Length: 600
Image (cartoon, rainbow, N blue to C red; front, side):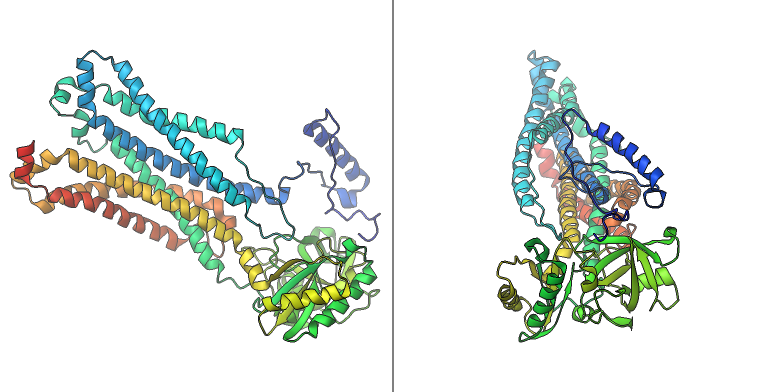
């Protein structure tokens, strides 16, 4: 930490336990009062500074916002799938209600009351909802076990323990009951009110309705419209995953292997740590097949890391630029394959001299504009750095980030006053198989200090694959839900069209007996499905355009209003809908009028 009396260490976090009987709100109020006093006493460092209090073990405030946005988008997708499935079930219940009107009419003629019939039908739909809820909870328990085994690509291990508790079970049970009652209410009401004379003769009024605006058509249009909202989100994440694979990360990952140690936890002093790191670097560099080796405190694309506000020495703190800070030893940039644009790499700088720094191009452009940064000094967090080199920009924390300003400090000069709390990572480049070099490096560490723990052992290719975790997760989740939504919408459209054909068989037979051509009959049903699909696309497309803005921060290399996605999705949906309509329409065109009229 350097001088503990300095007031620039604003990255520190304090862990405390609330006194029994004290609420979080009371603690927060006291901390705000303390922050106001500190701002008054130390205006240079504590002006506009406050305290943030949150439960230990929860997500840090900096990451919580992004996670909440992602989960909100996922919740919208899940609700859309639920709504599509609900509309599908409602349509099936309506069809069942139409088919059972004769049965209901017979019961009414024999003395049954309409209320009793409605209760019976509602009980049937309620049992259907509860059965679906039980099945869903069973699938959720299995999915939760799989999620608990997921390893996040973070520099520190996290214990992720998902569990289905009583609140989740209660919510699922309540949702199942509500869904069963809501979806069964209208079909129960309709089925219990048949037109007795027509129903007893088999002329169901509900099934004979050919109105363009019917409840069944409205539900079907809603299904397709919600699919139009869902599928662009799926397409965006799939396109984002493909684009992420082409992102230039700024270094050459193939042929690199990494192992981490933390001598500080084993009681090493800063001087002994530097001696150990230098000794191990020399030993590893002499191994067969090794091209070069160097140390850093944290490899790129490790999600976390440290950042400070830096500005040109002598300027006010208002001109500070948020900068990611790393440490490195001589040869690090050559080992990583990062091009040196200007100046020099680190050259075994003396520990007591000015702290040498190498900045990336993004830092040089933002801080110095077109001016040569070599030899300039920048300051921040109580330290001053002399810039000796400029390297090409590379990804710092995540694949999807905009290019961030980065400053690398000489490790041997920084380790005494500002040690790494995540250990140190040796990066080794080899001309052979990178994974085969892990054990030889382990043996070299054990030869110097057998008690030293080794962790975060992986090749850089494996590290890069871990960096694709978020785009792969998003593409997988949204892809699964998008596929389910598309299948449900297609099945719903096919079911409604097929049911319409089966209930209008007599009408089709009469039309064809009077001279209608089979093709014209098929086009009659096909046109109905296509018009319904086009109306649904027109309704859902603007909503998809608006909702896509929610996922902007999770997309890699594309914009939320990606033109190929928003053009392709309606075409794909229209093609699927056309196929779902064509099969029932073709069946309608093959109806034999003589056989149909004889049967009727």
